[in-house]
Image (cartoon, rainbow, N blue to C red; front, side, top):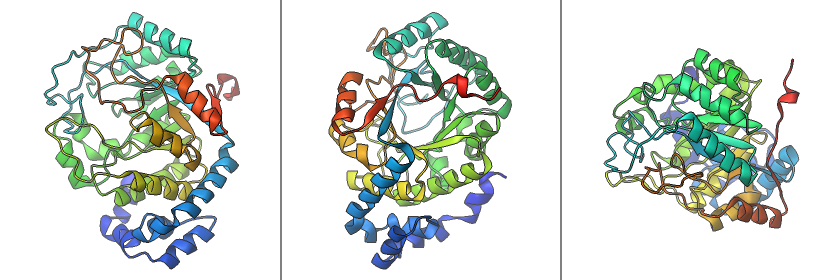
Length: 374
């Protein structure tokens, strides 16, 4: 069953009252429940929930520790190409971003150098990323990059353009563990306004990509909305719906949610629905109570001090020492175009120290192929 049917059954007109009309009594009712429905999630995302952030945080902490223990997994993004044929107005990689820095696609020997550099840092989980250029950065090329990375790391995921189910199967055969794919915005009119060119502009094809990945045997699916493109409560309600849909229809895959927030964008784009720190905290807490068994990823988009405060609020995986440009670990050439500017510039060692100081165990490796069914 396509998620298109589910999201069509929950249009904005049906979801908006859930957070606009919620009362304190609705919030307290949601906090008292073990299993939450959409009305409960709406209440926890509402203005009425603002005075309840502390009890929400306490419950989120308990639930996360119950399902995940005191562990934080570490991963690194590995950019192999910044070529892009799409015109996503908020992105530094966009074909019409106006950026003049160098665009490159790493050859296999340079991918190996990047892997070697990350392996020396201690990483065992990497996320391979590319721009949206399927004709130049082909499915076969991405599969080759996955196979190379699998020689160095126990966990390899991708955040690349949406592909067919057969292509995801090819990635799995090459050693793929996970697929990260953000819908960016679930609001169809806004989606059309910010995706002007390229295959990514096809809303329906991207909407069902995570489900295609799950059906192809991908072990972990990661979803999220790019917060700032549209009204944040609305987006997170759709994220919650999408997560529940994938849990039902891709039950053999584990699921995680990311919370990327627009902070740095090209000059031509202005963030119209900026998400403040307190809003992001409330959104994470609400989704943790709604999705207690789902992993939460936190990237270096956020400032170091803010990331540190979020650790006990439901986070289960963090990136560290990140670069958003191809070749960013082995050569670190500043002339190469980066996707966006990161906020947390600390080394992996520094982030590990903070995780331990917060009373959590940093985990470099959380899965091994030996556990795979024969």
